[in-house]
Image 1 (cartoon, rainbow, N blue to C red):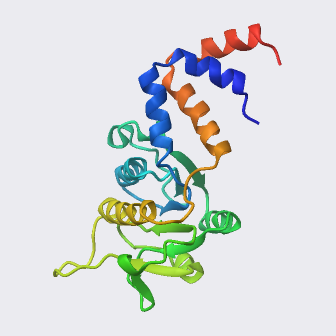
Image 2 (image 1 turned 180 degrees about the horizontal axis):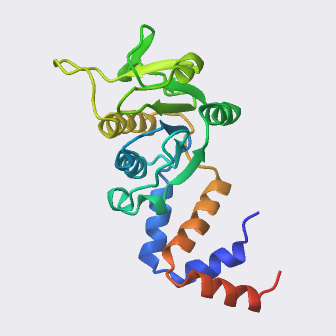
Image 3 (image 1 turned 90 degrees about the vertical axis):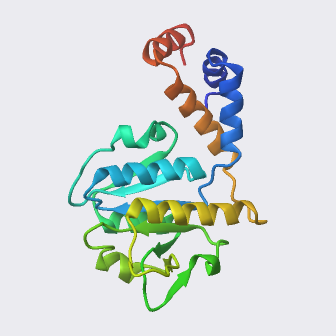
Length: 220
């Protein structure tokens, strides 16, 4: 349950421009698509994928840390970690099971005999788009549990792209198509309120002191 009085208190600290920016960005946020990255060895690539999620309006990024367990590169992310929700998982099974339980179909972004080009991909279904490691691609477990396969059309000699580049191309393409569709892809009112509160907290430098003062004066 969102504490609306506390939200109003925090937003009163913010500038009008900041609050208007929150609302404008939230109008374009979606959980209809979510992104998952698997055991990325070079963590700056995950940070770059997060940045693409933020720029193109994907609210959640799922990170599987089964082998490498590295941390987000804040310089590459350039602040995106403040605005994107990061869900971490210690195993592929846990990640896939969680996303399926939320109603997502699992889409492996890799060439496959049953793959689909971006322009032909059905955007009507909530989808979790999985991106694999630079070294090995997606794991066999994800390929076996995938509900579909998606690839980027290529016409050159090189048959692969860096993961951060692939993710940016796919995210931009699919979110653009989504916004030009009649699909109900927006965040719910509850989700918008949750993000307004979280973003307000992330925007206030001395938030711990301010929180302590507020709850001392307004005990629950």
